[in-house]
Length: 81
Length: 404
Image (tube, rainbow over all chains, first blue to last red; front, top):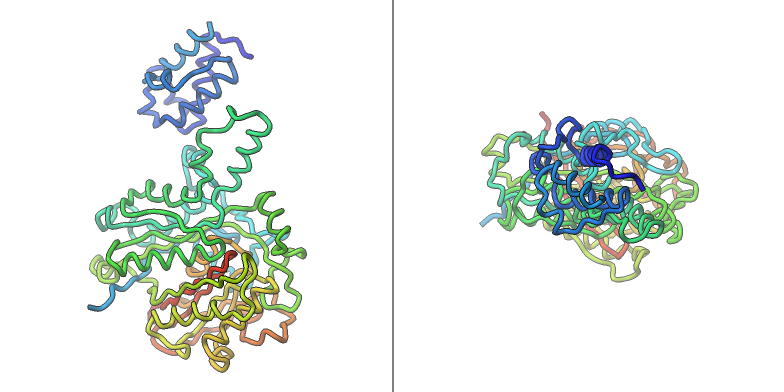
């Protein structure tokens, strides 16, 4: 399992989100999921990736409150600590 | 009150002969085959040329074909920028034989190898049979009724028939219809081989004495149907008209056609009656013509029963499956598109591979080489047959356009 340094988590999440559709330049910490056209199905898939890579289990309720890419990165880093 | 008429104003196709409805007809008429290594794969189709990364990820290959063909049909109809009718008056009925089988197999592999938590949240929307209809409805903002039709190899023609009835009945002013299929997968191959339906030689040669089964193909055909007066009012170019629709069931055997072709013949009769036309008026029959020993024999019998022996012998019949294989749920849609094109170009496309005629199958199957179509009236009339596992029979009666 990968070590959840903030830099590693950010890189992994940005890469995963870009693979879902948006151009990688659009996927900044401040970008909202709405702007990126990332919906609930994509977030479940993101949660699967994060669990595989960092052993962090994210529930539906956790995902519901995420608005931006930065929110997702902070949540994963905090849970992995 | 006279019945509302249904015209076709746009068509699109992705087939083993290439991307586009024109290339399909042109290459078939030229006698070219899209079959290689025993399968009709859409080798020229690159999803990224037509669809975004997100669209590709969120849809199975069968829906990729349908979206690409749908874009072509809407562009031809002049609908690319704006819908000409209220969105609630436009429906979407799409056929598939099986749905997203490749996606289903891939997710099952994940389930078996990595466990249930590895299965994608996109699985169901990828493999559900109605994914094509849902995807097209969302892509174009069509808010009338939308759903999928599943009747195996008859589904493409069923979809067009049901779409026609929606417009005739007044439930819709336009319907985007047709079918998509992408089942060149290990499970589909093994299943059709086990059923004894797939050709061991890998050669599609309908009505030939050496025919030994069908060759599987993939692709999509999409047609835009509009109520005739509304289409005329907006100045649409009409490609043809759906005059009649006939459908019956064999209630005989799960996979084998009723050998006397009685119920298939009845579907032909119903389609002609629905069209208000007689057997003598038919210029061309686009056969189901799968290259299986059973279908081609029972279909020949059915055509003779329905048209009468003498008229049947004088009516040219050919099979597109000789060039692209069997597109299952998309077959009827692609065949209707090719039939409309053949009528427009006044050409009888050939049955390829028909070198050794079966003496028992004695109709004019337009073997090997295309011939001119000389319509009996100002506008040519054609029938398009589709029959499916489950004993489903569908026949469309289509009218072409007058010479320019």
